[in-house]
Image 1: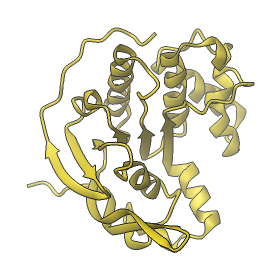
Image 2: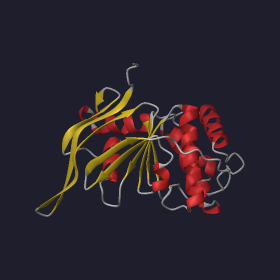
Image 3: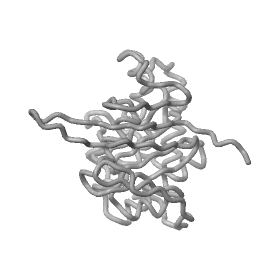
Image 4: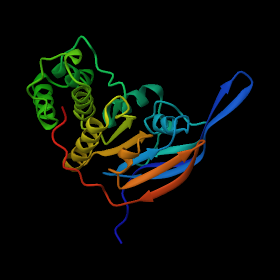
Length: 242
């Protein structure tokens, strides 16, 4: 049997929040392994702890107890500066509200993370053009976010998350602000990008449709993992996202 290639190892992680004198446990003793190149859905109702878990995996927050090991490295050993560089170099993020810069056009929004990394102008142009083509937006590069549909804006967000060639993309409720048909097309696009680029995707959602597109689903409730299942994928023939 081939050895599993583990990208992220979450070991006994808990996260508490303090509200005055009250301690509120958002996560309780969570452990899971995320395989490199996987497409994992973390499913649960609002308030279940899935976004907290995503933030911990993405090194945006730190656990109260337990460890998170990313590609063999305990991220708790990194300084704030090292964590910022780590996120910029190895992680991509997709949000339900798109988080695009409204005064920048599509090309500039996708190009922006490369500017932060001081990538050369020619390399930035090459990567940005290739990524816009990959998500079907090569003709909308000069448009601003306000001129786009919700599905188009989410495709811009996907291109921006992938343009730096991260090891892991974390998507927090990426279909929440989209209608069901557009949402399904967006999930198909993310799955296509995983297959094309080999990028690992972890998606937090309460949308059952999203889970149908993932081979592995982690179910979480009241801060605890209550299910970990592997299923056959739903095959979609959805047309291009509009």
